[in-house]
Picture (cartoon, rainbow, N blue to C red):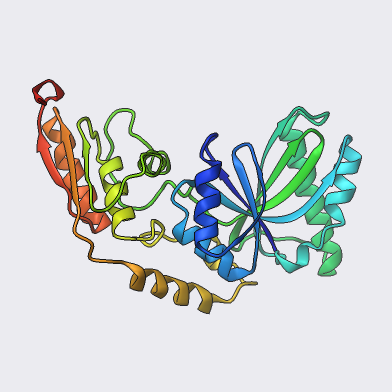
Length: 286
C-alpha cells in the first residue's frame, strides 16, 4: 500500500527521518508531502509516532485527468469495494492547483458520483444508503495529476489530545515539535521557552525526550475501518506504551500571563509529562 504524509513546507526532512526511524520505506519526497509504502503496521506506526506530519493518507488511486469525463471514468474504474461498503458515509474533500480542473466543488461532486456508481455495480444494488461509518476521500489535483486518498486521521495529527484550552494564536503541536527537533535539543540539556503561551513547545520537547508517542492520547479514523486488522492497533499501541522512558529532563516554560501558565500545567498533566512552569516577564531574564 502507498501512503502520503502531509506536512508544513520545510518539515519534509523531519518527516522522512521519523519514517526511517520507524523502519518504514520512504518512496518519494515533494513539497509538503512524503510518500511511503507498507502494510497496516506501517500506517499505524506512522499515525502513532509522526511528530511533524499533518495527516496520513492512504492512496486509493492515481491518474492523470484534464476533463471532467476523464475524472469521472477513471474514478469509477477504481476498485472501491475493497474500502467502502454500501452503507459507508462517503465525504469527499478536495484541492486543486495548477490544473485544468480547477473547480474543487465540481471535482468533489464528480468523484462522489463516480464512487457511488461504482458501488452500485459492485454490490448489485440501486440504493447506496450511506448511513454508516464516515470515510473521508480526498481528491487532490496537481498539474493535472489526480490522487484519490482515504484520510487515515480524522482530526489532524496536530491534535494530540492534551491541549483542550487555548491562548490567542497558539503554536500548533506539529510545528512546535518541528522547532524542537530542528534545534537539535537533547534530553540531557536544558530547554527554556521564555514565552511559552499554552505550553506547546516545552510539552513537545518533554514528549520527545521521554520517547512518548504523540498519537497515544487520541483515536484515528482508520481505527474503525472494517478492512484492517484491529489487532494491529492494540499491538502497536502497547509497543508505544512500552517504548516510553523515564529520562530525567529539565524543561522550563515561562510566560507573563498567569492564566497561560495555569493552562500549561493542565496540558502537561494531560500529556503525562512534568515541566517547570513559572510566571515571569521576558524582560526579567538576565
